Amino acid sequence: MGVMGLRLQEFEALTPMQFNSVYEQWRSRQDGLSRERWEIARMVALFAVSPYTKKKLKVTDLLRFAWEQPSEPQNKVEHSTQERFEQIRDRWK
Image (tube, rainbow, N blue to C red; front, side):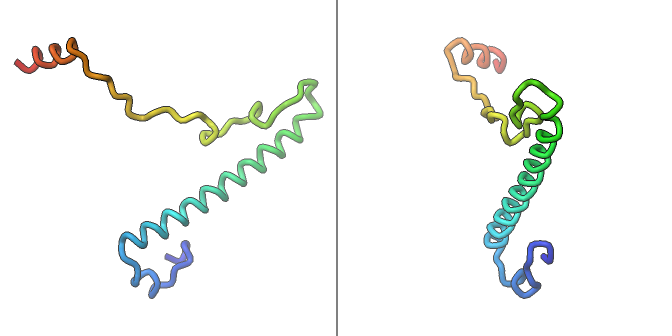
């Protein structure tokens, strides 16, 4: 409660749905602050390494973060076909 800046009375007045909304916003802010710190560290590293390389570096050449990776669909659904249907039907006979 104290970490999120809520006093006990404010916490007790929240419904679970309201608390979840407050928590999600707080978590999003914390993630943003963390990302910002990592971005700053990466820029410092780039400036430290730049004088020692002939190649023009980009920040992503040194370090690429997980949030910069293209996201893949988590649930790949295999479309049903007649052949697939028959395989499943034969398995459950």
